[in-house]
Length: 213
Image 1 (cartoon, rainbow, N blue to C red):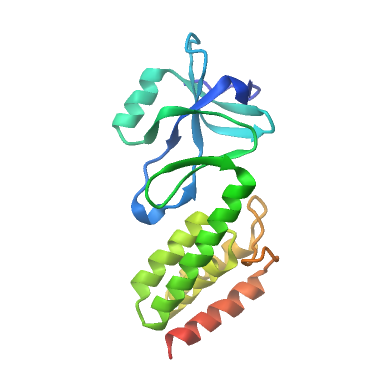
Image 2: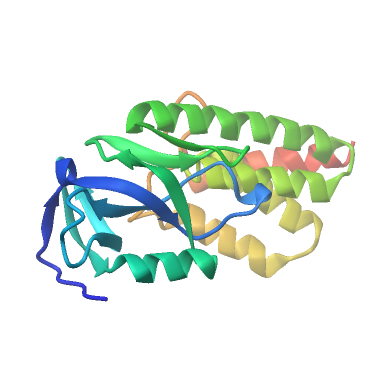
């Protein structure tokens, strides 16, 4: 594979033929990085893998590879193929729903939908937490994180469960992740109001109290 950093490929020249990784049920829903193919299949290197940056109408960078490399990665379950391919569009996100269905839509609509799913998962997780069903609650908080890692209650849920289980080291990890988000979207609540580590810790204490009722 080749990774020229200065490559700029118009999205209008690309289609999506797959996405990186293979996921199980509890890892969904989530946004996934697309694997592109040049629509002109006469090119010597028709497949474009991550890492790349999508900026407006262009894909910047990316690692190129041939179709046989992609096919081998599919066989090895390192990537997942999308067939038929999806035409790439500016301002769109590729994501996989909880039923393993591939979706592609405007990024703002996808973001709103995944946030609503994260809210739903956290509400159900809270119900399990109140019944002492930590494993079920933990799984749902994980799904919420996959859907919208910036939803503050999912982090609060993780901190609550790790605290209940006496995993002090993991509690500190989650606090650190909630604080240092320079390369991530800022934490928000369901109404998209900004949240801080103080809010996360406060909510985690409420969840811990809920589990003791």
